[in-house]
Length: 327
Image 1: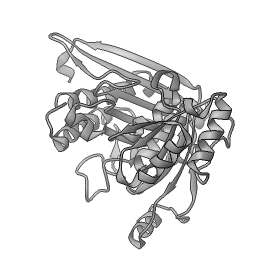
Image 2 (image 1 turned 90 degrees about the vertical axis):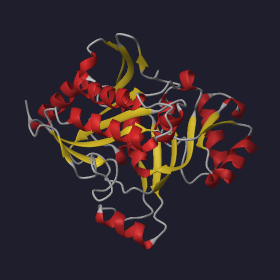
Image 3 (image 1 turned 180 degrees about the vertical axis):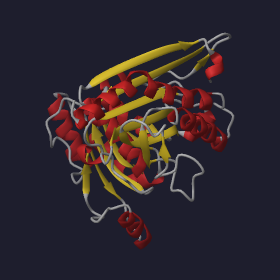
Image 4 (image 1 turned 45 degrees about the horizontal axis):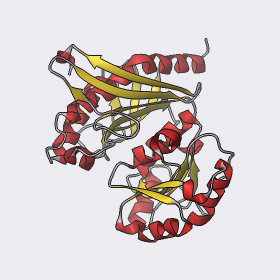
């Protein structure tokens, strides 16, 4: 077995159950604070739980997408090393609680999310906004383009799908900055699903429009969340394009320190997540794709999806945990 095969085998072993445990632990911790109105507390317990579980893994992991830069985040910051130090060297992108506001208000689609790839395979993105467009699998390259208008992209997608524009649903973050975008999409006759938070989930929903009702994601959101979403799309065959919004000298300088020399570059799915990629997400609150954590008298139930790019495998794991002490 050569080095590359050894790395892939190591990732595969992580995928089987260990990666699931990482997101399960974070999701359960956050779910205990659903609807309590305390975003920071919910995020912190999820971070603590995910970090503890990551450090049990037989990996040499480096967090490339985390809770912030080192001076801003006490744990799981960008550049932090996690794992036992034994095993394959990997990049890690994570969001222990994707949708802190969603969790605090007990609204749909809060997730615990992680992606792992071979060392050097995930985009080292600064914590800035990213303009994004994403669609699910089954379409030829070039069906949509980040530089095309919303009307052009929606018409092209409808043609490729073989449906009228009126049967296309677009997911957009409900933000004042998206006012003109929302008007442009509505002018086409397409439907819009506005979401208050959680654009990783928004992008992932394009991977299964029959289940989620979402065909395309448009708009600006966090760049770190864009990398996580790209990792999921790499595993399913979806398409995504993103462009960092580096609109101040300070942001350009920060990006340059992270190796980004072209501020206007368009990143495609494979640019943000290369090689063999593993992705896992566990529901914290009930959502379109995943059920939230359920607390029973003698058990805890979790719902997780695990994806792998090299095999396009999608595993759905509904687990009933009766050993409550592990949480």
